[in-house]
Each structure stands twice: as C-alpha cells, then as structure tokens.
Amino acid sequence: MAAELRIINKAEVAQHNTAESCWIIMDDKVYDLTKFLQEHPGGDEVIVEQAGADATESFNDVGHSSDARAMADDYLIGRLPAEECQGADVTDPTQAPKVKLSACGNSWTDILLSPTWTNFVIPAAISGLVYVSYKSMMRLF
Image 1 (cartoon, one colour):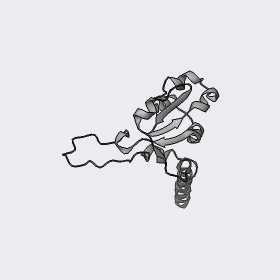
Image 2: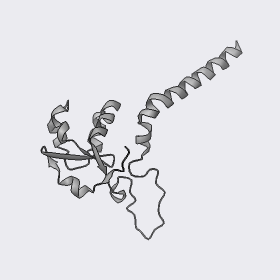
Image 3: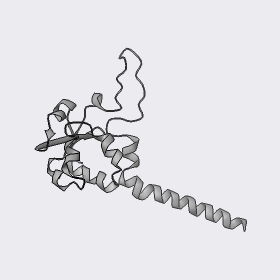
Image 4: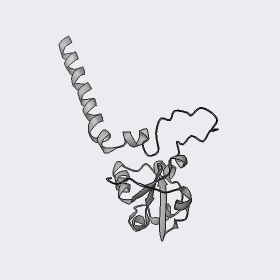
C-alpha cells in the first residue's frame, strides 16, 4: 500500500456491527467486510457474528488459506492505534518499558505468512540445504 493506513480505534470499529456496516479487526488491522458478506463461502452470518469486534482468533481457528489472507487485503481500511494492539504493553507506566517482539501490524506471523517468505525464500532455502546435503553425501561414496 502506497498510503499510510488510517488509524481506527476499537470504539469506532464497535459501531460497525451489522450486515449493513460490517467492520472487523484481524491482527490489529481493520477490515470493512460489508461488500464481501454475500461472497463469503461460509455464509455471511459467521462474519456478522464477529462484526464490530476482534475476529483474529476466530479467523485463525478456521485455518484460512494464504489466498484467503491475501484476499482480505482488498478490504483493509485501517489499523488500530499502537496502544490498542494485541502486543501493546499495558503494564504500570512507572516500570521500565518492556522490549516487544513485534510492533502493531508487523508481527512474526505477518512476516512468516507473507507471500515473499512462504512462496519463495523458504522453499529456496530448503532447496539449497537439500543440494548441499546431497553433494556432501556424494563425496562420501
């Protein structure tokens, strides 16, 4: 995406909790799925149940394909503010800040499931390891 995503807080998402205006949160990003409801293979009611709320766990529990995850990008309209992200540190502000593994919208899951990693880099690395192993074994014989 060329433009920076709009910051949308959970309170605003919660207002869009019907089939006429259906927004959900997945992995700290906000999606407007209103136009997708009739196209969803599992029926619109499963999405409407999650409308206005965080559907990350429900979405992941179903085991959607990487194609489904990529399709979701067509409906991406914004992201949560950093303080409302799942990984946000909500500890006592008088304590030293904790180092976080991920920032809002840039989790390890996002990185590992990105098309670049899953479709090119990981298979290429595995192929390289197999090749090196094969060559090493052939030298022994």
